[in-house]
Length: 220
Length: 333
Image (cartoon, rainbow over all chains, first blue to last red; front, side, top):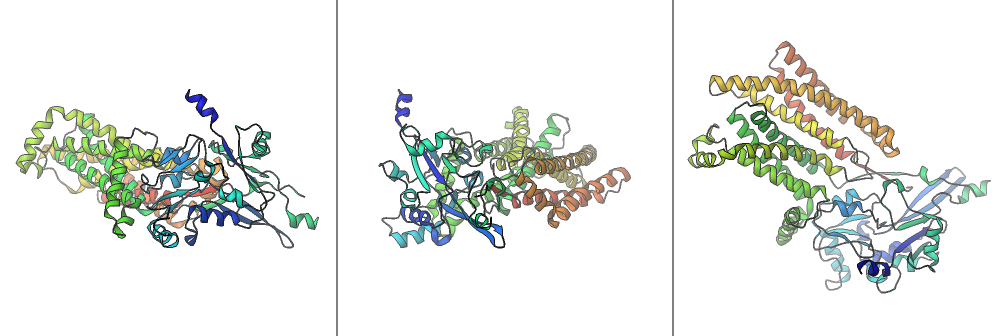
């Protein structure tokens, strides 16, 4: 019976196409607004890394969006001593603010830099910005991406996906045979990060193996 | 269009979460637990009896382990809550931590195992030490402790074996705690718990070297036992430091060959003069040589000097392992 119920649950996946990210950081802004993350202290649930490639005139810039991988084999979950880190029935990794004691075992355990300390200063600042009543961070805790669980359970996309202007960020359900995003994962074109760690992430990347390098292309 | 191999992009980023406070916690945890472990080992395996030295060392060991634990707890939201005047939050953190350690049945996290091991070591260690209170200096002057000792004595071997088992468990846990960070090559290293146990035993033998050097037995028989123990721990420490050097060599060998991040950390650590001179030379090799000279040439004054350097090295080892907790992230920066 339980198995039947689980089969009906969505198996959400997040796909990032590295070929189309232009580094506009709209995803970071949308996430910060939606989830009240302490951007004033440079703490983000999702971030776009940038790197220069090439030398001299043959120089280019690549962008690498990242967020919590919502690993199915979850190092942070295994490190948490109080049960503050838990997984929803759909496999989304969450933090219970009330149970978090700030030991940071999960932060050190996370191989994807997806967690940060939402400290007292951040809580107070957030309350000033959003108001005591509307602040979703009432206590200090370790914070992380939730795939915008409050949105996806209502049929919406995560804030970063819905705001991405180039559709670099895509959202799908592996249990839906007609989902085009799930099809990208099933086809093997999208790959997870750091497979050797065995974390079994739910975030996949297109273009990990190859990526156009504009500056070099022009030079050639 | 050219192919760009993303595997060439790795980001190395030092961790800033666990710093000197946790290094103190790991050092005192290993030292204190091993002090109890060695005392109970001598009493119940090697059948040597020196109640004053064993009882006081074990009590001090329990104290050190728990004092170190304060640094772990302060590193949580406790200190921050205190600074912001949220006193109830402090109790919430403590309740969640200790409650989790005992009640919630989640036995994955090493912190939780550690909390359990420390609690059990503290319990067994204290009971074992108190079971010798009737014969231990100063403690035997306190009437109520003598009564407690008489009550505990029938089960003294149970308390002793508990001290042995959980003392070793606490020492090993200090290494396992760091091993759950798969992106940190210096921590998720299979040899780290072994290295920390060897180092913890070495620092504890250094403590007994100091005790047997400075504290004389109250009678001839006790002094004889103490000298015998002192002689043995000196040789034991020579063997332990030898093993530690071997373990350090294997640790760096694996770090270098196992993965790209490890190679980076290898170069970082071995180009840090604090680590090379402070730990490898002053905290490891020099005391090893001094102990050899002291044992072979009977130059006793070198014993306390070597012991102090071993203790210094034990702390530096943990400090630098934490300091070089460098993440290897699979993206460019």
